[in-house]
Structures are given as structure tokens and as C-alpha cells.
Length: 389
Image 1 (cartoon, rainbow, N blue to C red):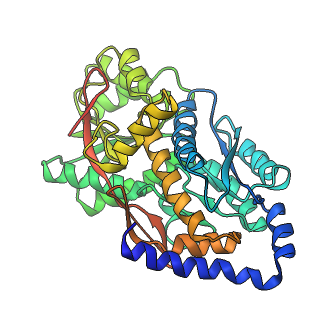
Image 2 (tube, rainbow, N blue to C red):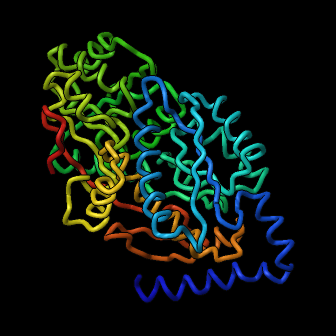
């Protein structure tokens, strides 16, 4: 731990210790009702664990749980084990709302983490705010959640605006004069389309065609034909899950040749996508918001791979690594929350982190900044599903 981490952690512990003034018995009773007991911290998750987008929830949970397994084996956080309670929302915001109410009112969780998708987070946040429950590290980068500080909401991943800026600035640099956008017919797709159009105007790379696709689409021939007729310099995809495979399959089959770009959430199961697309994944450029999971020279990646081996974790992906990093950062916030852990002391603990590095993965938090990381890189897929810089 760096000196700055130690100093700010002491401040957070002092903040957490202030609750002792109310008396140990009262603190224990209040804590038990809020997901903290003498030996456990209970956290809650609603995410997609079935259907065409299930890879996101399954992999994200696997990475978060792996990080918690690591800390639990070492004795937990200030002597408490971390327990993660997860419910499937099948990617439907209405189900997310039901699950969130269940997690808060029945499961009595201390905080929420590992949520997936823009519309699902939008459904959950009013419930968090009503109950005063923190929401940590949703797998969401939509700009609208980041433009002002919500005391209860903390991000780890870089925002989609930073991913889109990286893509569009790159296109501008290499001389692309216009682009087309294919976007998911959802809150995630429409909100980030607006961000993409703003950035395209800023970099003078106008959007000449924009077409939507349904999440459960099994055919993209009409979309591909529209793009082929528009003949853009590049196509930017604002989509997630198996629909990306559907689009790439039909776009490549149409004979159109524009370079394809996707956000970090575009491909989760790279090996599966590579098999389904039979080599057509080759050349797809993606924004990445964590280092490559095979880059063992990066300490956080080396820790992740070591823990995968130690705990027999079979899942290995960018999303799982992201979840692992999320667990590490959240654990630090819980530690800084102190022995008399409360939601207020947890929030103070996270805000006290300041600029810090978790195995050379940089984040920054304060009372005025809950956005976490700004790390974005561009990589290209091979036909077999590997990524190359």
C-alpha cells in the first residue's frame, strides 16, 4: 500500500469510528439491518445471467466473486467475509427493479454492485436513492450517469464517452471522412448514439447513416444493405451481446468493406464469437477499458490469473478481469469504512482513495469525482478471437 493510500485510509477509518459514539449495541443492531454482521458483509447484484446477453452478467459476477474469494481466504475485510447475493434480471429493467427491491428489503444487503446495462441501472437508482443504498461499479459507461456526482453511485470503468472519443479521434487521425452508426434499440443505444454524434461533429467526421437493431435480432441483412448503400468510411457499433455477432455475420456477407469499430461491451465471449463467425471477427477494432487478461506484466492481471488458478475459475475474459478489478477496489473502500462499517463510512472510504493504483490500474475518487478510471485503449480482433494492439 502506498503512503498516500495509508494516510487517506486512516482518515476514512476515523470517519467510520465516529459511529461508535452511539454505543456498541446500537451500532450492532443498525449494522445487522444493513447487511453487516459481526462476521459478514452482504452485497447484492441484479444482472443478466440468461438469454442473448448473459455473458456480461456471468463473466462480471465471476470476476467480482474471484476477487472476494481472494479476500475471504485471507480473513475478509476487518474480520468479515464478503457474501455476494445475485439475482437474474434477464436484461429487463422492470425485472431489475423487482430484484433491487428484493435485495434491499428482503436480502438486507449493505450495498449493490455488478449491475449490467444502462436501462437496468436507470431502473435501480431511484430505489437505491430512496433506501440510501450505495451502488458500486455497474457495467455501464453511459455519460448521463457521470456528468454530476451522485453520492451513492460509484463507477470503476471508463465512460462510453471516453471510448467513443478514442475511436472517433483515431478515425479522424487516419483520415476517415465520415462514419455510420449501428445502435442497439435500447436506452444504452440511443443515449450513446447522441454522444457519438456530438463527438463526430467535434472531430469533423460526420455521421452519414444511423440504423438501429433489436437486442434479440437474428437477422441484420436489411441493416447491412443500408450501410453498404451509404458507403461510410467506417462503421461504429453501439451494441452489446450476441446481436453483435449477427450484425458482423450479415455485414461481412453483404460484401461491404468498411472498417468496423465497437465499444468495450460489444464482444464478451470472444472465443464463442470467433467460432460462430468462422473467421469473420478478424479486423474488428474494439475499445478496451482494462488491460488484456493475458498481459501478465501488469500486476493486477498477474494477480487475476494467479487467483483463477488457485480457485479453479474457468471463465477468463476482459469482463471477468474488469469484475476482478471492481472487487479489489470495492474491498479497499470497505476496509477504509472501518470496523464499525456503515454506508456513510463506506462512501467516505471510497472518496478518501484519491489517486491510487491497484496493481498498476489507475483510479481516482473524491467527494467531487466518483468516475474511477479513464483508461481506454484500442485493440483489433484476430479471426480466432485474440486481441492485438
